[in-house]
Length: 609
Image (cartoon, rainbow, N blue to C red; front, side, top):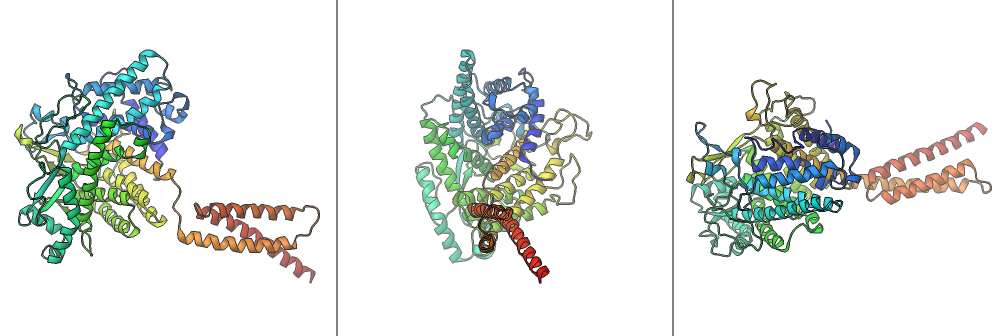
C-alpha cells in the first residue's frame, strides 16, 4: 500500500470520532489514564495543529471530507465546541482538587510479579510519558483555542475558552517543571559492571585501547562540563568532573528522588516528591525528547504559545535535550569502523540487549542528525541499520501478507522502574510497539534524506511497515478500524477490546510527518539536473535552427508551434533548480517535436529528389 496521509488520517478520525461521546459521558473508564486519554485527544488535535487541510478551529474553512469523517461529533459549528469540552473534561479529570495537574501512569504500570497489583500510591506516580505527552497536547490545544476564540461571539463560550486556556497553560508549566526534575545523570566507574557494559558496546578492542579511551574522554568532555554547568554543581553526581569516570544522561522514568523543587511565578499546585532512582532510561529519554521537539519548533515561537516563564523553562529543557543528543550520538557513533549502533542488538549498561533498544538509540541519533543536518554517509549507515531491524523484526516485505489482527514477531520488552519499590511491589513498563516506532523513524529518516535514492529506500520501508501495521487494526467491536494492545487481544477475535491509543497516536504522528514531507519541495537529483540542463541546451540550439528557416510574413501554424516550444523551454529553465525531473519531461517532449520536424523535412527532401 502507498502512504496516503490525508485519506488514512481521515479513516482513523472516523474511528476516533465513533469512540468519542458528544454528550461527554463514558470517557473515563477503568482503562483510562492521563497518558491514553491524552493520546486519544492527540489523534484529533495533532493533525489539526500540523496540517492546514485538517484545521478545525475555523468553521467556515473546515474541509468537507474532514466534516464527513467527524460527522458523529456534529457539524462544522458544533465540532470545535465539542473539542473544547473534550479538552476541558481532560483537564478536570487530571487535576487534583487543590489545582495540581496529574501526570499519573495508572494502569500502564504493571508489577514484576504477575500475581500482585500496583499499590494505589504507585498508580498516582507521575511518569515521563504523561509529562512529555502533555507538552504536545497543551500546545496543540492552545493553538486550537486561540484560533477558535477569534471566531466566537457568545460571551459565555468566550469565558469558557479563556478558562480552558488558563488550565492548559498551568498544565504546560507543570509538565515542563516535571521533565526538568526527571532529568538524570549517572556516573559509571570503568571497573563497574555498568562501565564495562558501556565500554563493551563501544567495541572490545577499543575498550582496552588507551588511544580510544583518550578519544572518548575528549569527545565527552564538553558534554561533561555542560552537565556540570546545567546541574549547577550541587546537583551533579560524584565524579562527573573526572575524565576517568564514565557517565550517561537522559530522563528517568519519573521525577527522580531528591529532585529539588523549582520556584515558579505561576501557581502549579504541589510538586510531588520524586521516587525514581537517578538512572537515565533509553525509552523514557526518547519519549521526553519527542515531546520537547514540539516545544522548540518555529511554529511554537511564531504563535507565541509560551509565556515568558515557560520560555525560561524551555531554555533549561533545551540545554538538557542538547546535551542528551550529543551524548548519545557520541556513544552510538563512536569509532572509525563499525558504529556501536550498527552492532545489533544494542545492550544497555544494565546488561539488557534488544533490537528495541537499537531502535531507541537510533531515535535519538535521528533527532541529532536532523538538528545538525548530517551528511549522506551518516544517513546511509542509519538506513542500512533500520532496514536490518525491519528484517529481524519480520516486517512483511512487498508481496508478503500479515495475519489481520495479529502482529508478527517483534521485540517485546519489559522495563524495570527503579525506585518504584519504595511504595509497593517493583513496577515494570511493558513495551510492544516496535512496528509503530519503526514506522515513525523510517518516515523521520526519509525527511532527512538529501538524495532521491535514499528517500526512496526509506519510503519503501515505511510503506511496508505501514502496510504491516495497517493490517493489524482491530476489525470488530468499538475499536473497529483502530489498533489494539497485542498482549491484551482476547482469543475470541469478535470479542470487544479496548483500543491502544499509543499505537493509534503513533500511526497518526507518522502520517502527519509523511504529509509534512510531501508538502516540501521534491528532492533534486544532481544527475537528473545535469542531464536536463544538457537537454535544454540541445533543444534551444535545435529550436534556433528551426526559427532560422521559418519564412517571414503571415504567422503560420509552424511559427505558432515553434513559439509554443520556446515558451515551454523557458518554463523548463525556470523550474530546473527545484524540479529537475519535471524540467526533463518538458524538454523531452520539445525534443521529440523538434525531431519530428527534422524527420518530416528530411522525408520531404528525399521525395523531391
